[in-house]
Image 1 (tube, rainbow, N blue to C red):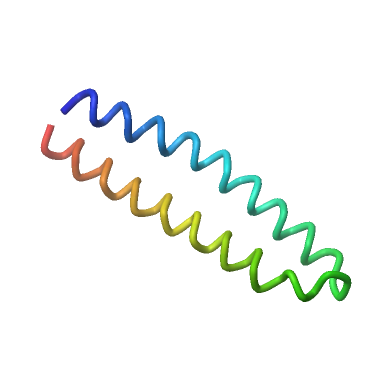
Image 2 (image 1 turned 180 degrees about the vertical axis):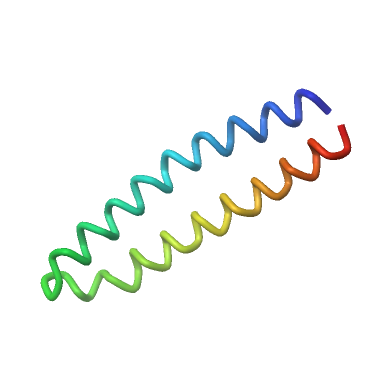
Amino acid sequence: MVQEIEELKTKIRKLNSKAGQMKMDLHDLAEGLPTDYTQLMDVAAATYEIYKQLDELKQQLKQLEKTK
């Protein structure tokens, strides 16, 4: 169980880093509007998905730590 928690924490750290980059990409795209507006939905959807994944992993971690 401890190994599973550590593996989950590692995944969260990596995903957190990727999520931060996605957030910056979305921010940069938004600042440049209306240029590249056609990319907005794709970048926003990808950003949403990564943050959704991150939230799910954090919930899993919380559950594992409760049962530890």
